Length: 122
Image 1 (cartoon, one colour):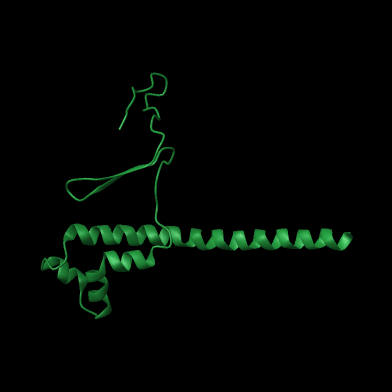
Image 2 (cartoon, rainbow, N blue to C red):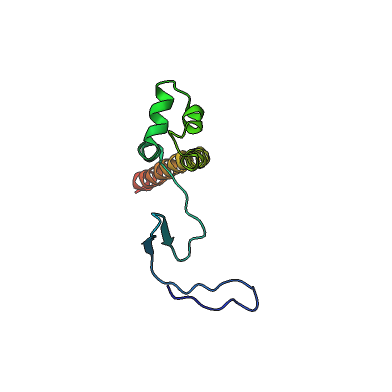
C-alpha cells in the first residue's frame, strides 16, 4: 500500500489510499484498509459470534464450565479473551442498532404523515 510522510503541522500520517482493501496475512489474520474510517465495529452480531465461538457456546449451553475448559486447554485462552471482548462490544453496539432502527421508523412515520397532511390540504 502506498504511504506518505508524516505531516509536519499535525505530526500525524496523511490519508493517501483511495480504495478499500482486505489482505489475508500469513498467520491467518486479516488486515482491512478502509480509507476515511477511524474504527470498525460489529452490529447485529449474535449469529456471527455463535458460529465463530461455537465451542464456547456449546459448553455454556450444556452447563459445563467454560473457564474449566480454558484451564484444561480445550479452549484457547486467546480465543476465550476474543470471545469476551466481542461480547462486550456486541453489548455496547446492540442498543445503538435498535435505537437507530426506532429513529428510522419514527422518521419514516413523520415523512408519511407530512405527505398525508399535504395531500389533504390540496
